[in-house]
Length: 105
View 1 (tube, rainbow, N blue to C red):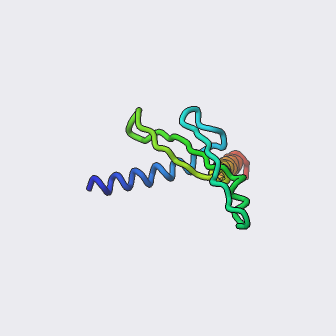
View 2 (cartoon, helix red, strand yellow):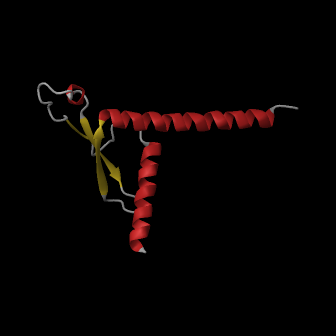
View 3 (cartoon, rainbow, N blue to C red):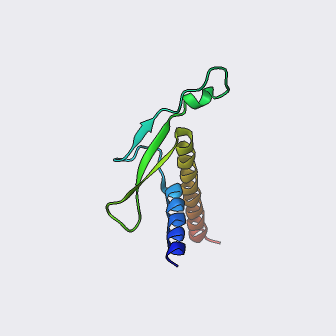
């Protein structure tokens, strides 16, 4: 039972992080590490320009524990873009509903 609750909590945490992640660095716990250098003659040249960024996220239910998540910068940018798109969609929907409520028929 406890393992099911922990799995559900982890899934909720990941969804919340994806929805609220910003493009700016986290105040504490942000680290940047360069991706491994490509082997000459391979097609991994793009990876050298896409550094790996590690961010520390607070774990729900505790004030002390932090969870380190490492992703490529392009992945963090994609998460931030999707989160912003979601916020923009919600704002547009709320504005549309408000204008429909206020407009006389």
